[in-house]
Length: 579
View (tube, rainbow, N blue to C red):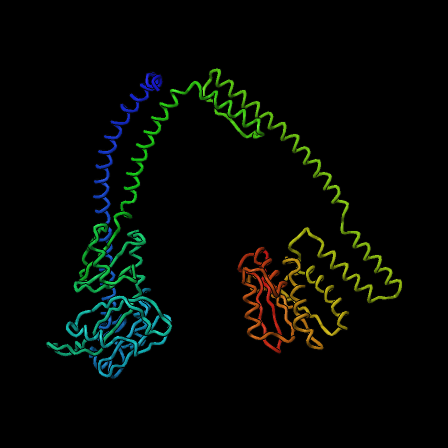
């Protein structure tokens, strides 16, 4: 230890570390503080500008829907030379019209005037009758409409439009959309206006809250950040966190870890409030700080490592070379040493690397040559085993049957030979439609002989179908086999019909049978088995064909099954038509 402390290299390394790191620490600290303050001010100002811009757009959107509701007072149309009767009470109560058109037509015009308006309904004041229109023509359940509560809130200011907070429009049958509602009274302006306004009816417009979401994308909020539209009475019109209550919002807005930004929306006397996590907003700033501190740490470690390396520079290369020689001796020839200098140590390291590389190449060449020799011998052995002997054997049996005048047996052997040749040919996955049908006829001939011609195969090919179009090989025979085994065997006679048609860019092949069919439970189980990812236990043939088609042509293709008990079953296969 005493000799180590007196080493010139140790003293030089300590001086280098102290002189280099102290200024680096000070400069880095002050730079990070100044940069952090600037980034925080700039980011906060930018977010405030974005909130202000969004509040302006929201106010314009509310004003637009307010203008749409004022169309009830529009009494002049293009092409008309005189004013329409302005007596709204007479028009609504007697003629059931607004602006000389039926109320339902007027509501439908409003619904389709803007893509975010999902529904419109008008409540006549004289008898409470409700007229409604919905974008998807859903029926309205009048009892679920909170008309009485809404009209009560409008009583204090009957001549102004009112916005009601976000709610579900479940009063339209089958709808669960989140909407907010804009309401405006239709006041009769035909006579002298007094203190008490004569309300003829009330128009309500349901507006989808996705209207808000188009503005949310401009802010790039995080998953936990909140954007809330709240009025001066602490009522929440909208929140991107739909499950958040008003109390939770007020509690969270007081959290010091949150950045709260507000902008007024004059039209609805409300504020747009953004609650943003400081950690998420200044994530890049924190990352920059961490990067600087990490750089300082790395510099410190590098300085220490450099000092240590400098003191042991001469002994380290030789020690590494000895270690790598032991690795090569153990049989690992993938090791390499870096050449860091042009001196004697460097040339020795380069010679060691060349020696290991040439040794590895020599061993690899000898090993690969031996593998290739074994592979050649294996291929030569495989080439001796061919399926042609099977075809030749079947042909000898067939000729023997012909010689014995057993024509039916000869034909069956010929059909079987054709099937074996078709099945054993592994060189192709797709074949012409004509070849697949020929194979099917050979199969059905054997079935007909087996079951004493009780079953008939019919084939109907549309005129616009070309038999040269390719389909999946061995896709029809398993379907026909299922039709016979599960559909026709329980009946004395039956027919299997194949229909080939073109549907635009698809080739549809439908296989019908007039067998026993399937009940609904069996059919549902079959559909579930076709679409399941588990290994099949039943309907293996159908599942195999279905998955092969989808694997080759995509998920838009495959097969579908329809069946009716005691009537029959149909299986439709879909293939793409070649361009």
